[in-house]
Figure 1 (tube, one colour):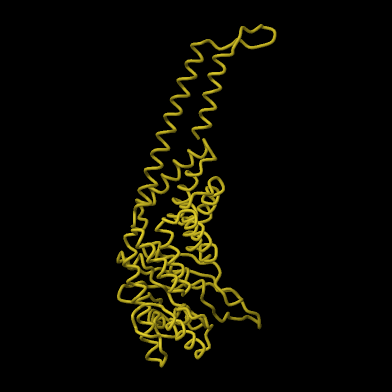
Figure 2 (cartoon, one colour):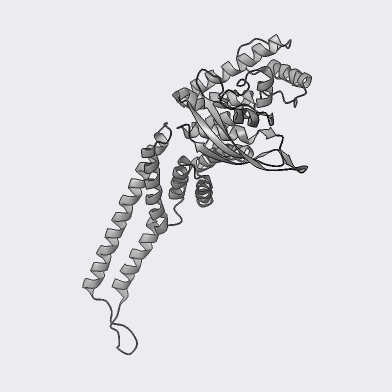
Length: 374
């Protein structure tokens, strides 16, 4: 942006230095020195105004990035204000990589993920060395359930800035989601070493999850070694043997289906709310459990999110809408990500499967290790 403005000012200086008397037949009268001075003052005023707008935008984004709370209506208004200011900045200079990155972050906070991805990708095109842009785009991919893309972005962020603690944390959370607790623990430890404040608590939660899995494996007759919460080679071998016995994919990872088989996931969904919920739940043949986001647990956030969703004729889940928010975007997203993995028996009409819509509540309570739906 400043380079563009400098070019504009340079044009004014050239005009001031190079104008010559004009002939009425061929050129317009040259501007007077007073007119050039007025133009110069106007340009300086424009620069100062743009600088103030850019400074305000940077301060707003800094506050948003430092905030650990979920978006409240007041914060949502702040995000919208930040987007408006950054849009003005980008209207003046579309090549401002930092403005694209910061607007992408603001869009992500209000769950406008396509817009967030577009801005973050453009920021990366303009400045491929920006590790934070890769990290933020990885977060958006993760929220959308695009785990390979998220992993690729976190890897790139770490490669470009090995001391970026948040990227290690985010990659660790993704490894945990995929059931690879060994790599998750390694990344979280690195985040702790780099000084990330909430990494120690995340490690504690992960080790407790592993400890419970080890205890369940021991009760089932398998030997994961000591129930110390460390996902070592013995635990991996025990998981592989257990998965083979249960007819599960033999990964050696503590994935959702293995947690469910070990009884570590939320209990079977309650059908006590109403007959409609019971009928809907009975149609599902595979329900990987909800995962209570570590950040939400650390903050003590609870709530119930109501989802309205499309049950497609091929047995998968299509469009998902938040009919009623839990009050915390992170919990709403966790419920949506879990539901995307569910599979059902579609009803049929005249022998042909058909698409239907349904509504369910998903609960997140801190006295439940994972979360549940009813």
